[in-house]
Image (cartoon, rainbow over all chains, first blue to last red):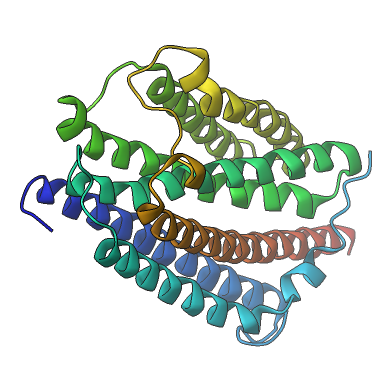
Length: 50
Length: 240
């Protein structure tokens, strides 16, 4: 790769991974909270099949 | 009116154990696809290395369209059958679709600055993509503000179906109007040297999309199941 416009290419791939990993963390946190809340209300184990 | 929610706990059970492995596969495939695309594709004669942004920008746009097509299908299905799991699937696809839509816009701006000399212009493609994004931000806001589950599902199904109609307008905007944005990049319209990288990354984004929608849907099913259980407990408490 040449240096021309390289900062834009790096920025594009950086933003892509930031957004994808950011959403991955968000969805995993949401799922984790949902599992715990469901287990609390129903009395099931969080890791068990609900 | 029937608002079928009895299937939610069964949906929440699912076959969740397989999905973390699918997620690992999707992310590994994305890393490999990006590496192959960056290493193997030569610099473009006109755009130079800037062409490599295509491997993330174009798949992000396609993924957005697929996600909103899922919203359209399951919103219409909800309006027809009134099954709550259709509403939850449409909402999950809308959230993931809005994320990829936002990413598409940002990547377009990063590409536009060196290619066109501006971060943003009110071009038909850019404007229609922004309108699509705002519609689905509105869709998600609507869901956040309406407490009644049945009303929320009905209203968001209507907004989701109407919003998804904007997708073909976005797609065709470069042909219907004179725009700064070039006509769509597809494997048939580009140099064969770039086709493999684009195809691989398109599939990688598709796998990420499927994984995200499934995980978000699973969370939504659990949340609704919890709400149902709490409602039943409250009703039981009132009766006793």
